[in-house]
Image: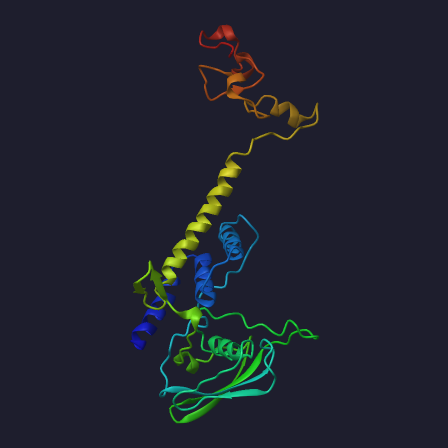
Length: 295
């Protein structure tokens, strides 16, 4: 089952490479945070427009192996030995270590004692789904430090030590460790008793589809607003060559109801609010029986 799940993750990454850059960025957000916020939608709309030159240039952060724990070939089973927090993770005390036993380890304590802080470190290091941002102690007197921790683990019969931080490269070995909490549970409750299980990672397609719908709705609304904006030629100084030439163009310089504009029956595409047939078609009205003044 685990091998099948890793094949699915690898296929999702491979499939994403054929998608547009803003969609790959959306996939990354879905995998890393689990939810898409309104601010994310604003950013994705801007990324989509940037790809077509409709906004400033942007560099999307596409989904890649560093965001998903795609297990690579290892030399044997991987197990955690300990996690030592140095600084910068929530309000955890510095230089404290949580050691893991060979079978089961139970960590208990009161609310806000720091249990979730160590879980957040492991979720980031092992690239779990819905990993939260690891924040510093915002209530401290000094500016928060960048998070730093040391993770010791055993791969087959050898021990390794990883210096983890917010900017550290992910460990391929730790991708073999799965970290789950309430944010990672892909179980949906329907009505009162019906429980449906969605295979882990396949829910991202529903979330990506919802994101695409929201981005499309936003873009269509912006397009409708632009198409409904009145067209007007900017005013030109009297007596200039540009003003003289523009005076002979069959355009509507100001928003004018069509009912009050002059339309030539012989040339229905020529319309002007304050001109006669002779001015618009450059022919006298007597030259053609169909040329007449509009209402």
